[in-house]
Image (cartoon, rainbow, N blue to C red; front, side):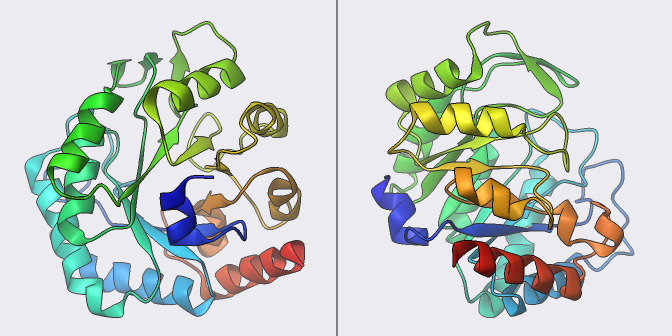
Length: 266
């Protein structure tokens, strides 16, 4: 397994909880009256109280999404994380949808231990043709002096269809060979929608020594099955009030989720 991944998470199938910031400045849904720091702090505290292994800050509310994130949004993400640094007691990561360079920049600036993004592949998507550059992003990370920061590659893009006709396991195996990610993530079609178990199983079968995580749609009733196959998971929507992606983290749902994780690990 990746040395960076193990240094951050160990080997006990980590579960990463999402802190979805409110819409940031520069995005159409931004509301200047919303206290972004207070809302993020409440979600962070709920996830930490539930004993999540790590958290990840994301700009899920910045719809419509862009491939080059607005500078104001990037700056505000860094500001919010900076305001919360004294509250963070577990490893954290960042993801600026869908911009690898912005994700790396914010991660480097804030001291994040990892970043998540679409770093490889070519897709037809809701945002247009999608063709990220993993080499450019990884070199940028190293130029910023953060070669210790793990890079989690989502190899099945949400809101998109791969223009690469190779099966998902072949694309995942190729990405590991050519782009040296610290973990590979398998997603469903949209936020909150589960990856097919068959996809998780197929990707893990060809990547026995690379961490493979379920990236979307993991639910209370499915997490035990997911962790029997995957090396961990990232979860957001299931932890929210009423399971609604756009609401705050529900402390009771978060605690129940991690209780099921502990039982599955045992």
